Amino acid sequence: MTMKNRHFNLITEPWIKVLDENYQELTVSMEEVLKNARHYRQLAGEMRSQDLVILRLLLAVLLSVYQRVNADGEPYEGLTIDDAWQVEVDSDLDFEDLIEEMQETWQTLYEGGEFSQAVFDYLKAYEDRFDFFGEHAFYQVSREFYDAHVPAKNQVAKGTGTVAIKQINRNISESGNSIAVFTPRTNTFKNQLSIDELVRWVLTYQNYTGVTDKTKVNRADKFSVSSGWLYNLYPVYAQGTNLFETLLLNLTLFENEQDKYSQPKPVWEWTTESYLKERIDETVPDNLSELYTLWSRMLHIEWEESNPTIFTAGLPKVSNVNVFLEPMTTWRQDKEGYKPRVKRLDNLGTAMWRNFGDYVGTDDEENRVPGIVWWLNFLTEEGLLAQEANIDLASAVMISDGKGSSQMPAAESVDDFTIRADVLFDPDPLAARRWPRRIEEVIELTKRVGGTLYYFAKEVAELRDSNGSGSFANRISAEFYDQLNEPFLGWLASLRNDQDRDEKILEWKKALHSLVMQTARKLVQESSPTEMRGKDSTNIFTLYNATQLKIRKQLS
Image (cartoon, rainbow, N blue to C red; front, top):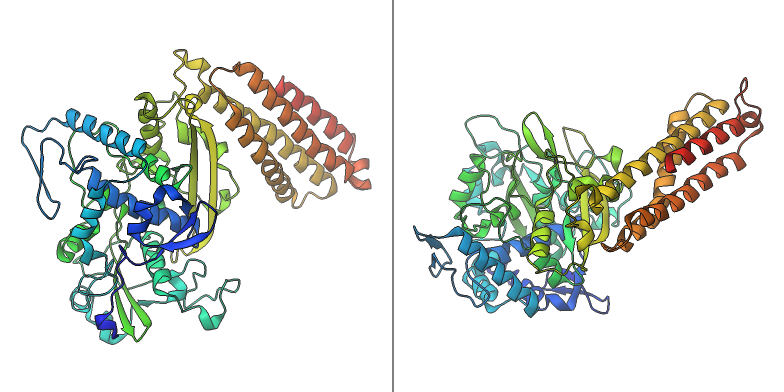
């Protein structure tokens, strides 16, 4: 079969990696994953950040369906839908009634444990847009279209403006200028991928791109290229007990403070010309399906037998300031407004729980919680999630090298914490008693104790040699927090809304005291004669006694 006549349709061909109920890895089609989601534990691609990309793609499909029709496949009242699933909104649409209908749809799906036929009818309607080859190749443009929208020197015939397989494969991320030594593939195989692998990495590349490529789409003025939407978030999402539950928990059918209907419009529902104009104009999406399928690059793939050459042209960066449509991020505020937080290499070892307030909010009005946390709170308040249900908030972050000229992936950080719904969304009328505030106070106390240990380690190092005392203390501090992660997450998961808060907090204080003093004693036990002798009247024993006293006061 020639490449011209080849087909690989993402709806029916296997390309999504999952773990089944017996922890066996399977590769399944989009249709299979949506039909059998409750029988799969989770997505299981090459990286967790890749899994997040695919999760968002599946959510884009589900949002494109259930923001238009209910669980029975009937359009919501006030919406008229044509054969291409395009919506005409009645002038007298009652948005509050629409939200109630969407809420009923979510409940029906959750209780039924499967997605309705409407999902597969929708995929059938757009079947030709999910073929990785052909006239409307998935996440690609034709050669003619590509050549028409890049400088003449970068057209396909010139052979420039390409990105290698070994660069879009984020397990390697090797550019032409920098060789990746420690990779899962030898040089011979770095530029080889099966079709299903290529699909997964093309999707991932659109979200975590970097800026090493130099070709840009044509535009009259200069612009900054996108490095990938997800690359500029500190993502947070909900994990369920199986893939169906994970999809449902993250299926945010409407957002907080939304007051009008926005038709879902993922990338496959656009004409290529119209979509490129939106990207060139730097238009911020007004619907989640479009945001979840946002391109950072215009791609064209040329095939020589089974060997692909990927041509790439940078698209303008879309502003992420005050884009509260994005539910899967924590936020920070500066003079421009609210921006997504970004995890960097210098805080790679900081666990999620240490920034608890960023995820659950505080009484500070300037603190904005992630949209997914608002959604889970809404589901709990409406009785759609049980108060005793465990909420598992997770994060999968691709972290760049921090270099403005490349922004190449340097690390992946994966983390999560589990907490009961009635603890996370404590309804206690007395704010000072609510678990989230008390937990945040405990974390701040833990950080102060950790700070005391840091300065003890720093002073010990200075007895030995003033040079490098900071790096020694940083290492001791990092090891201490690594030791804290498991017991703190266990304590957090053990909390209940009917418990005596002071008793549970005392339980953690005792555990914290034991762990911090264990670390401090180890420094004493491993001390050298120089540290024992000390300087002037200060030695490791006096420092230890002072540290012990301070920690005791902090925890009293």
